[in-house]
Amino acid sequence: MPIFRGAIFDVDGVLVDSPHQKAWRDSLRELMESDWQDIREQTTWSPDAFTPRVYEQYVSGKPRLSGARAALDYFNVPDADTRVGEYAQRKQEKVLRLIDAGDFTAYPDALRFVITTKEAGLRIADASSSKNATSFLSKIRLDTFAQEHKISAPTVPPGTSLLDYFDVDLSGRDFAHGKPDPEIFLTAAHELGVEPQEAIVMEDAAAGVEAAKRGGMNAIGIARAHDAELLAAADLVVTTLDEVDTAALTQGRLARKP
Image (cartoon, rainbow, N blue to C red):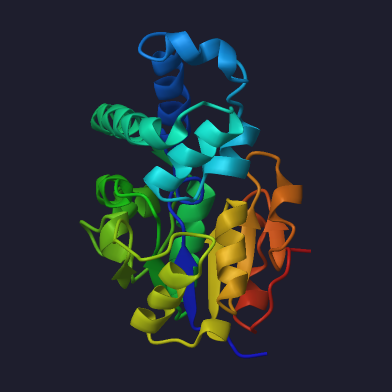
């Protein structure tokens, strides 16, 4: 097994507890209770039906229009082709308002793991389908986090944001194919200068894990939503990145801490 030389991180749900799920859920509710009220009875939607599990299984990890279409199809919304753009636009407007309001947080276990991988000599990249991911990453002060958590890391100089810390930033780029196609991860590996089999992908969505495996990469699935069975295709499934054995990682193995 080759020694790992690169680590690729999805953003929403892996690095950041972002407002995307809330934006998707609330935007559809607003439409169903206003402009789309006349077709509501033709759907399987209800205010409580857009659960975290629905989001993780059908929407998470996909480009905006693909995610919107997946949600509309799941709830059997008629004329989805003509409604998908309106839904995607409303969701985008809502998520931008939530970002501006600071309605998101970084996962401490993820920040620790990001620092650990870079300190171990791996090159790191962020790779998200979200057009908003760089906004999240630029607002997170990694130097402040390291200081508060008493992490001594020469790779984190004063003034470093999480976005600054990555060697390659692919989030929000336009690709011909979205996840589960491996294009975004293969591009990340190429720009990091590593072979696919030398890269580890951190994902919380089934589509992202599938993309990593289709690209010939190793995958760690993070089941933050208690959805480990949806991530079963990953080489290792954890509920927090603190569970990953970082000593084994430097030896080219994916394992849980003993």
